[in-house]
Image (tube, rainbow, N blue to C red; front, top):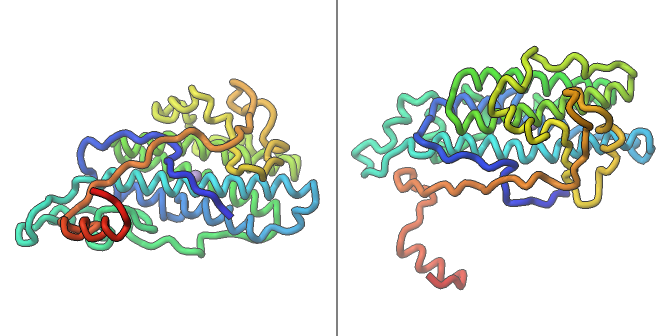
Length: 298
Ligand code: MN3
């Protein structure tokens, strides 16, 4: 089971202006084949289906997969927040006959305007919905780890390409952070594969062959050592991740470190109401009636 913390994993910048086409591109990093929904659900189902973790030699690998899955829950949250911030202000508060949603007509993704009140959905940059066919859970430990290593590299390529599409600081802040965290996860699966097979798969990184330090928004987090840290997203459990996440960091600038508990993170952005989308669709008399019902004094 899970506990939830009402924080994003980082503090996001405030959007300067609406950028619905950047939001459409960023959707790929949420609900695309190599998006955060895929990393989340692959590791989650692999952890559900894991066999024989009562064996002390096998347990560290389940701990690793389950723990990273939990971090990925915060990644879908962070990318969804990015989509929402990029869409903020895309419509106008006008009467219906004044076309308040006109911008949605020519935006890359009209779905954002028609179905979600200018906010995220579980789909990719072309509007196709994410689906469970993206989940690989073979039950073979080596193959699942190899798949996860590949998935993290594919996710990295997608992030870099979206970064190359937009210089919007909201999009780039999220991408910079997730490039660093994805690098941690790729390295962790590589080290797990080394423990299982003896092959130093992690030496293939980075794929594609460009260092995270080339992206200023990623370098900022590396300067804080975020690329050496694996957070333990549990109060009591998954402690055997430290059997895998140890030793000199591949970056050569220090040791790999397990951090007890999640990062401090940042605040959840408050999205303003959008009356032209009828969201949340409550008005003055509603507030008074509801406040009375809930025992809230206005
Ligand atoms: Mn991720």
